[in-house]
Image 1 (tube, helix red, strand yellow):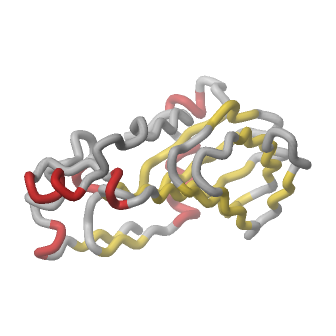
Image 2 (cartoon, helix red, strand yellow; image 1 turned 90 degrees about the horizontal axis):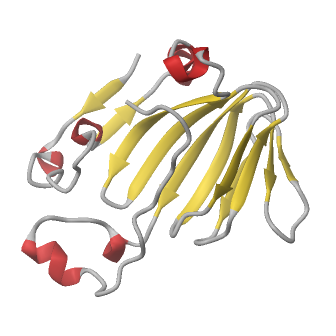
Length: 168
């Protein structure tokens, strides 16, 4: 079961910056990750053998949570975010490869945090699911309102690109 509650703080003016999936910008969200993983296994990307499927669970101006399901022995290559990220294993076991570093093993319930702009690859040792949390500085968030635009840095980084499979 997924619970999403909208408050006055998440009305249409505060989510107007979201061009895709504005319904994910709610004040309170609760998810049954086991059910979300079952749903990902039914996605076309999973059935076609791409090796992974994903779903954006939360989408805010400066914050994202993406659930990623990967088949055993598949790899998510060459990712880098202009934001701080965390990777938390919720099913299976993954291995994170960071250039010029040792491989980092993340078993079930493992958590890794990476600072901005650190490149990484993720390898599924066996079928695995993990939460990718992305949080970038507020001044780099995308707003439509004049007030928010005035607060933004004049040179925000490129928009974050997380191409990890299918997303609704």
